[in-house]
Every structure is written in C-alpha cells, then in structure tokens.
Picture 1 (spheres, rainbow, N blue to C red):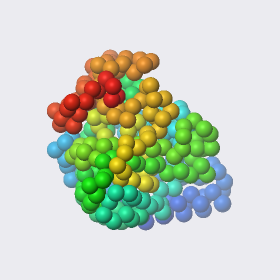
Picture 2 (picture 1 turned 135 degrees about the vertical axis):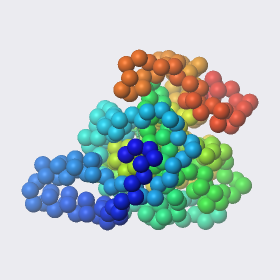
Picture 3 (picture 1 turned 30 degrees about the vertical axis):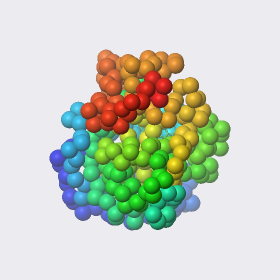
Picture 4 (picture 1 turned 90 degrees about the horizontal axis):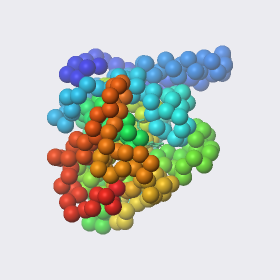
Length: 312
Ligand code: MTE
C-alpha cells in the first residue's frame, strides 16, 4: 500500500481472520502433515489483512519506505533465533489470539485487557518512521499503531509513576529461543514516563497498512524512533508503571554496551564499532547517522542537562 492510498475496502474482521487462520493451520496439520502447515503459515504472510480506518499522521518522514520484503525478513527477535532470517522462518505459526495485556503498578485502575478490546480504544495512525539499529543498519518503516501517550493518559498514572516497564510474552513452547539461554527471558524494556508520553512514541499493531507480521512483534510492539531498535520490544503482554528505573534486557546482558536510554548518538561509539554511519537496507553507500536518529528537534529537550555519553 502506498501512503495516501487508504483503500477502505471491506475486509474480514481481524479476530475472525485470525481464528480462521488458526483453524486452517490445525486442520491442515492433522490431515496432511507438517508441509501443509508450513504452506498455510507462508501464505498468511502475504495475506495479512488490511487494517481499516487508519488515518495519516503529520509525524511521518517523506523518505522512501524500505520494501515490505526486507522489513519482514531481516529481523531481530531472539525468541525465534539469533539469525536475521530466523524470525521470518520460525514465527509464522506463533499464536497472537487469544492475547491479553496486563496494565499494572502505579496507575488509577490496574487491569488486564484483551488485545481486541485494547484496539477498540484507539484510532489507528500510519507513521512512517526512520528506524536505526544499534548494529549500524537502518530502515524506513510505515508502522500502523496508536500513540503510547494516549494509552498512558487513559491509564492515569499516579504521582509515583516515573517509568514504564514493558514485558514480552514468555512461552517457550512456541518460542524456540526461550528454550535456550541466549537472553534472560522474558525480554524486558523500559522508558521514562516523559519519554513514554512523547507524541512520537508509538505502539504498533501493523505495518504497510496490514496487520503486524509475527516476526515484527505481533500483536503489539513498541516503536521509539529516536532510540536504537532494541527499545522496540515485541509481543508485549505486560506494561507496569514504576517509580524506579526498570531493568532492560540488553543492558542486563552487556551493561558496557547497552544502556537504559539507548538514544541514537553518532558521537558515541559502541565499544565494538562506530555509530557514526549506517547502512540503509537496500542502499549501497553508507549514510551519516543523525543525532536522535533525525528526531532531535522533537526530542532533544527531554535530555537537557544529561550527559549523553554517560547515559547511553
Ligand atoms: N523484542 C523481543 N521480544 N525480542 C527481541 O529479540 N529485538 C529487538 C527489538 N525488540 C527483540 C525485540 C531488536 S535488537 C531490534 S533491532 C528490533 O526489535 C527489531 O525490530 P524489527 O524486526 O521489527 O525491525
């Protein structure tokens, strides 16, 4: 789908579609074996339903989006393996319904909400964002989602809430990576409350106008375009409002390499490589990396007075 081309054609409602897909996968599996299951899973990647009622956002970059194929086949999602091709190869049959998200901690009304109810609370927006991975590659991705700030406001944090802690699903039966000790499971991430309230912070449920592919973090993932990609926690099941800085998976694994803030900063080298340049997937020549990934005008004030060499 191209931006501006908002086809509002009737499509199968998402929940119905997902139930049907699960039914097909089960049926095919029991009747004709694993190869048929693989084919259903593969077909589903190109048949993900369109999301309707999506409005355009003034926050989109005009840069050319990275092709859908690259966005959905070059991924970091260690629950499905450490190779960039593993998530697309192994996440196809991951079940994203039923799915609940627990909202906990310092908020007016802690509650657990089914994903489809959560979606009914918000109008979806398309936001085309530059994304920069700490591994020095980047993409431009047309996300579909809703502002995290809208969710935070609705949950009404108490005065004690200073950070938001996110937790990914823990399901070793479905996630082969969680049967190995590659990372501390489940994957966790966090934002300061004012970062979470920033209008650029997005909770994504789709990309390219369609339902989010499993390898990109379905059914719900965080997108923070001024930070390195690892902040974008996938398959979120818990959001907890807390008073202290929460642990994050990568800073726990390698504190000298990955900090809590993870702001894109070309002036500070990663201990093992430079952060000054990046390779936009699909391009040959590297391009300079911009402070805050090009979003400095909007977000730099959040870090006034902080030493961003220390708080990396
Ligand atoms: N979330 C979970 N649960 N597990 C992961 O391994 N990888 C992170 C982030 N979110 C990761 C995760 C990293 S390192 C990156 S760069 C982005 O997801 C990649 O998102 P993408 O595959 O949609 O580009």
